Structures are given as structure tokens and as C-alpha cells.
Amino acid sequence: MRGFTLIELAISMLVITLLATVLLTPITTQVTQSRLSQAKADLDQINEALIGFALAQPKPYLPCPDTNNDGISDACPNTNSTETTGGNIPWVTLNVPANDPWGQRYQYRVNNGFTNSVSGFTLTASPSGACTAPGVAAGNIKVCSSATVATCNANVIANGVPAIVYSYGPNGQTAPTSAEELENQDGDCLYVSKTYTTVVGAEFDDVLVWMSPAVLMSRMVTAQKLP
Image 1 (cartoon, rainbow, N blue to C red):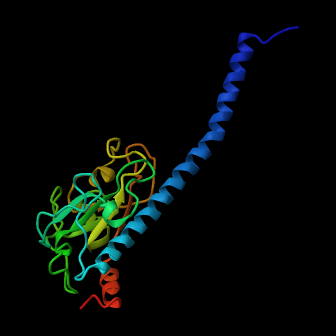
Image 2: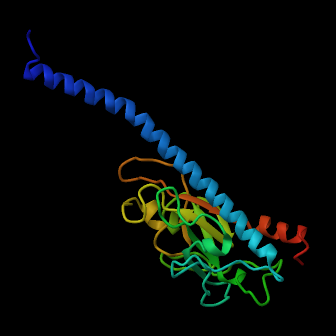
Image 3: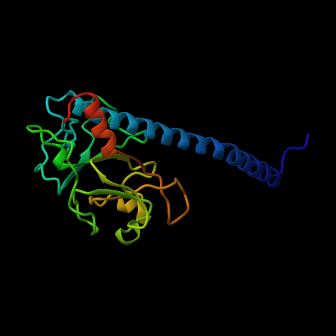
């Protein structure tokens, strides 16, 4: 009986490889989208836990981030509304997921004026210190759909945010090269949120959820924690 020639075997292997690529690509996309959805759900849960934390205090305040990776809220350097503090989500303090679906710590930045555990915050609490320069962690957290302060002012999604929680997405904190993802890593007051894309040079897979000041205050008033 005649067996396969080397050429026939090579063609067969090529066909199998092409079929595997065609079949696996949709599966990989589905897995990525599923994990992105899970990250968004986790961040919504964390955002709600932050509000719940404030509601549970004698005088409402938000926890400071975890800065030593033990999951417990650490002290912010001050309670100035002109400054912010960033770090990991204090997952032990809040009893929420520590890691995103890619095994990275969920991140958190809060306006220090909302973290005063002695006096709490009031209905007039408002972040200050305009977000006008790259690299400056001013108190006024701003979320835009573009990567620079100059273009952000024309593309603002949210402004005066008390707190923001986020995931660095599938490519993590070390792989990004796009200006939008790098902006979310530089520790300043400006964040970018836009549609997921894998376009080379403009990749964006970060997932962000921010706290609405109006919602925060409304929840405090409804629970009779304020005024």
C-alpha cells in the first residue's frame, strides 16, 4: 500500500493548522470578552462596597488604598481635597475580590478630602486642585476619552470624581505602549476610558469604574448619614 509523501504530509499539517487557527480565534475572543465583563462586574461591586463602607461609619468617609499589598487600608498622607492617593484596592477591608481575571491587583485612587475618618465628609465636599498638568496627582480626578490634558478638556467624561477603581486589563501594567494606557499608569489625576481595541499602537483594554459625587451624596442623604 502506498503511504503519504512528505509533500502530502506538509499540506495536511498546514490545513490542520489553518483550521485550528480559525476555530481557536473566536474562542480566544470570547474568553477575553468574558474576562472583561467579569472585571467590570467586580469593579462595580468594589465601587458599591466603597459606598457601603462610607455608610457603615459613624461619620462617612472613604478608605485609603492598600499600599503595602496586605489588603488592608493604609493611611493617606493627609486629608487635603487638593491631593489624591493611589494604590491597590483594600480588598480585605472591603471584603471584595483582590485580583482581576488576569491575576493583577485591582487599583484604586481616592481624593484625600473624602478620607477623613475623624470628621468624615460633608455635602459640600468637593475635589479641588485642577487637573491641568501631566504627572500631577491633583485632587480633581478627571476621566477623558483621550490621552493628553490638552485634548482631554474637549473630551471629558467625568470630572471632580471622589474615587476611581480600575483594572489594567489583559496586557497588564508592563506591556502597554499606547498613550491611553500609559496615561492610566502615571499616577496623576487624569484617566482615560475608551472602547476596547487591539489596534497596534493604539491598544486599549483597561477597565475603569468611577464614583459619581452626586450618587455618593444621594446615598448618604437617603441613609441619613448627611447632612
